[in-house]
Length: 272
Image (cartoon, rainbow, N blue to C red; front, side, top):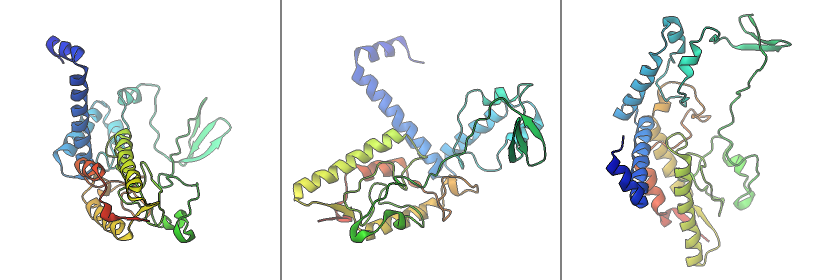
């Protein structure tokens, strides 16, 4: 709730309003990031408590138990809905957790042999979160194929560039904070970072820039070590995990991401 005086101030001073919104967004980004990158953080505990409080609105004990995940909140991506629990308790709604065996002429048959009739079936089959710019084929130095480089698991230096692929700039690339805070915030900061590198090409007279293998390996080693303390490693199978079982996302704080994106460390790059 804002007082009449505060509302009047925001109306008369749009910049003050924008600054307030910006500070509020940063606070939210910091808290959300801490909730996923620090398993025992107070931020995660608060979100977990909120999830359990919402679940408590389900009156039927059996239904509530079947709706309760066997993993920590946020280990898988949260589904945010203001009325899901209300709607699933309606008399004509049924929660079915059996696997789908097949489609039938009238609906679906589940693995327990039960047939369900439907007028409409909505498919929610997910997506391949590890593809990024693929199937676009990208060839780097010495005819190296990016698909081969990423065959064990996608990686990139600070989520924006890959060694051996000069002038290949990416927004929301591998190992970025896709599950931590706003994708718009991420892309804007990454764009600023990439533009600084492009400006450096102009100043230096170089034609190409790429991160060194050493800098990329050091970043990846640190990122994987930090992953052990994240919510994604707390015991669930989710699309956040890559083929090696490590979160394919940013495992550090929001502030660390902001600091890294503020200005490139040119010692981590090769200009040619």
